[in-house]
Image (cartoon, rainbow, N blue to C red; front, side, top):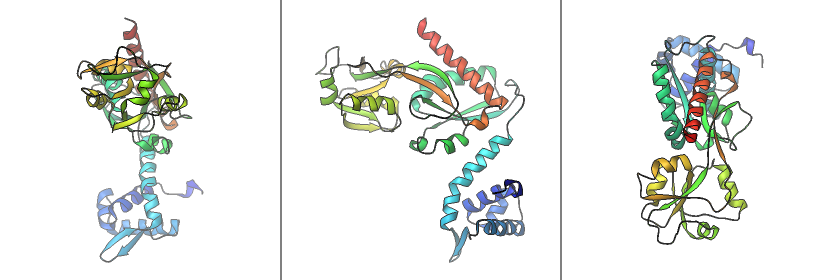
Amino acid sequence: MNLARLDLNLVVALRALLEERNVTRAGQRIGLSQPAMSAALARLRRHFDDDLLARVGGHYELTALGQVLLDRTASAYDLLERLFSSQAHFDPAKEEREFRLLASDYAVSVFGTRLARRVHEEAPGIRLRFTQTPPTVIDDTATLLSATDGLLMPHGVISDFPATDLYDDRWVFLAARDHPGLEDRLTRDDLAELPWVTYQRTYDAPAVRQLGMLGIEPRVEVSVDSFQLLPLMIADTRRIALVQARLARMMAPIAAVRVLEPPYEAVPLREALWWHPVHTHDAAHIWLRETAARVGAQLSRADEE
């Protein structure tokens, strides 16, 4: 494939055609006339040797290849947009830009709130958009990172991408404040016998793997898609949950729960900001990473005070 011979404007046309499934609407979306859009479709059909859009009755549907290209084209478009918006110089006090970050509600609560305050103070024209990390992050990390500015996630889940370490945390257990069967300590038998509330995503891999290695099979009674819901699902029940210590300290006063240490040496948790290599030398992204690192260092210093 000789990329030098390709017209990158066709990426814009291809995305519009696949998403709109209508030549006229696709042209209106990107500012091309109907004849110009039809010509772009003809070029794309010749390139892929496929109709891409097939007429069915009075409308168009995607061919099998068109369906495959639908997600790939959106990712390629986002990557190209970020590539060509890269800057050699960046003045945070004057620039206007939005950074999109993938993160769990835990990361947003513990770290994202502090980052947002720092950005508000230093760069009033900068916007942050936090989006829940999808479960496909392990299977298609490169595509996800190419379409965003970064991912807040601890080490041990993904690898082979640049990252900036932010802060350390540790795992603890939560139980109801008036739990009838627990004293001040948990035992491994308690972990095997008591019902659990779990975070239903699968990418808490290190902590989950450790339980399996210890021969502990959690008896899951409830699973939720939010770390912050764990304490609420535990209060006034016999359930327990594994949660990050920083979040546990924040949530314990809100819900009637108490924090208990694990009856084993739990794996440490080091949160990091991961990004796609296309961002590495972008001045705006460098500022974002350096700001995130400063906020992480501030969070760590607060532990020592």
